[in-house]
Length: 87
Image 1 (tube, rainbow, N blue to C red):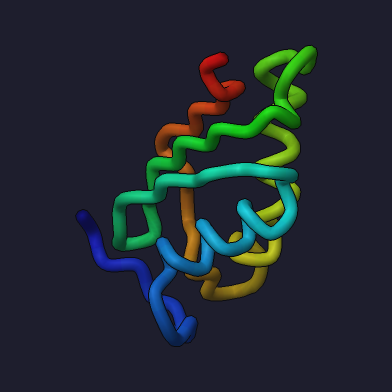
Image 2 (image 1 turned 60 degrees about the vertical axis):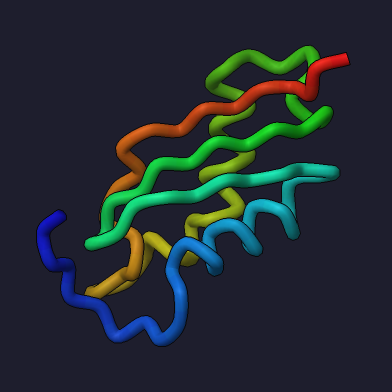
């Protein structure tokens, strides 16, 4: 992974997971990666009946604050998978 300059303090994967789980109802997020590039998988019943794009927009809106500014901790989401829980 390449180095990505940021002034963010703390664990970026934890911040992403907490932001997603805090805003997407009943969600469980798994985040991996580093250097500004992350892979995210989210499972939530909130995605039921939504298109893939609608589901991904929910996640992106939850993490938008981590992607803004001159030196954001998140430069790119390389992979974003959303799904509803298995029943």
